[in-house]
Length: 310
Image 1 (cartoon, rainbow, N blue to C red):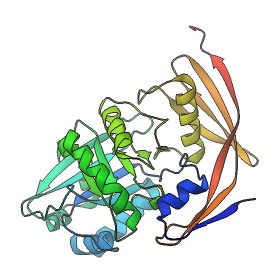
Image 2 (image 1 turned 120 degrees about the vertical axis):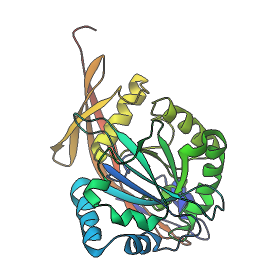
Image 3 (image 1 turned 135 degrees about the horizontal axis):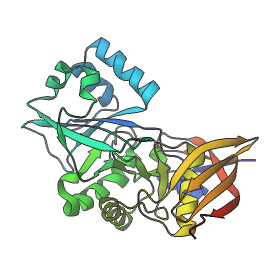
């Protein structure tokens, strides 16, 4: 039976943390990215307003279909601080890794954001239009008008990361999971982290640039995996001490009644992680949106089959 935790006069991120809600298995499903630079303040509906100003109704319908069918996530981004943006703007497009295809990210500079609408949506989201981006982008949610937790918890992370990683770092609009602020997403790979303090974010940023995943540091999961797979990946990484981005590969989740099993492959072994899912806590914050009953993933067993070479 879940419990209800109401924390008066506290931020939702604090209420979630105090309730014991687990962050693991909560990464939003994203397989493709469209990042639109929009400096300055954002209203709660800033993304919808921007899309309406940039794209035609037909293009917006196509973006909606891509979000539904292909996991496209469109975000607004801006440089940390109070940049009002008087010059050209950058648009980033990319894809998280998929079976048989590596992750990629490209950037396109345009005189003004409205110029993006002159490009066909399908052409815009394919590689070859812009300049390849080698290092991952570090996206920190600071969308305070959507949920003030993100601004309060996210802005210090963005400033600290920018001091070290420069142009890899962007503030971004809502990424999902306000109650886990500060939230950081590594794009295009889709590695979600939550409840980060500044020191944690700096460790994650350094690791991400090295091609590593820190499963023990606020890791919410990988956006190309479902919740079961996200948990299984983290369990195996923690158990085996694996950090390389490609060190762990999850197969599809297999339903087992109230639970699931996921087969995970590493260089040394194949591990089957068996899990149950049960209602966790209901976080009802008093000062910001995001109240939700969580579903905790309980690992009930890990079966290991070493590869013959080991």
